[in-house]
Image: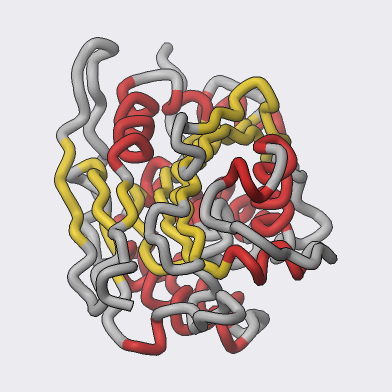
Length: 297
């Protein structure tokens, strides 16, 4: 018998902490939802909405509005089984162009992904601190039913280094001039880990995946994280596995030429990453392009 997927509402909860755009883990909610999920889609959405609202009260002010908008976008989608693709079938993609002012990036994402884009001036992180209403995140797309997320972040290169105790000076326009690529990837990982609670496993950098473009302006790498599972036997019953791992692809770039670093993070559970969904996420990361801001600055 083929393994079953976790109910959509349970995976919705898991998605909310897979990127720094979202909030801390809802492990207890996931566990409860896995064991008490109803067959009615209406009941599922109602219970999930109640859980999100209750958990929302524990969040910092800077992240509350974004969590609510994320949950609203997710639960407004029809509760249907996500498409299953053959191993050799490509996932349909769509192009997203940041149409806010200034336009900052272009990226291809799977057509089925919902998208939350910045729509107001306050959605753009501060030019000096890299913090805004949504932290450093300016775009998020994902599939709530499959716990797949793509997030775009923007923050000052200088601020990232200063937060780690460095006193940056000189040329910061290429990763080559900033320092060792693996060390920079580690700093980016640590930046993403800051908002995670102590109960969540730390993502690990695959040092062999670190790669620098020939012009020194683009850095790519991957992360892997084990997800805490309170009842492995339930997971085995629902999904056919006793452990859950998440793979995250990252592409950081300095191509905007405005002192800001932009990075895209695309992640999925290993079961999905191994198939067409993983290929789609790799395409999304490869397609990500930061818009040159030097002419408008």
